[in-house]
Amino acid sequence: MAEVKNMLSPMSATTINISTSPRARRSLVGRLATILLLAFVIGWALNRVAQQLDRNMRPAGFVRGLVQGALMPAAMPNLLIGHDVVIYAEKNNTGVFYKLGYTMGVNACGAVFFGMFYWRLKRWRSRP
Image (cartoon, rainbow, N blue to C red; front, side, top):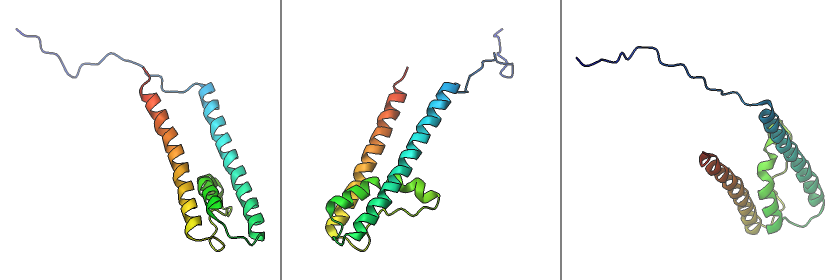
C-alpha cells in the first residue's frame, strides 16, 4: 500500500535571524543624520543666497534656475518642519530661460538620485 504523507504534521523548525546588528543600525542612523544635516545646510544656504540675489535687481537667469532646480529636493526637510525655503524665483526671472534651467536642474537631480537608487538596487539583487 502507498504511504500517504500527512500534510498537517509539524514541520521542522527553522529560525531566521531578522534583526540587524548594532553596527549596521549605527551606520544607517549615521547616514540618515548626515543626509538631514546636509539638507538643512543646503536649505540655509539657499535662503542666504536668495536674500543676496533679491537685493541685486538682476533677474534670475538660466544658471540660477539650474542651481535652484538641482537643489530643490534638498529643501524638503526644511519645508516639512515649517521653514520657508526659497526654491523658485517667482517674480524676478528671465522667463523661459529661467524655467528651462529650473526644469533641467530638477530633472538632472532626479536622474542622479534615481540612477544611484536603481544601481544600488541592482547590486543588492545580484548578491549571492
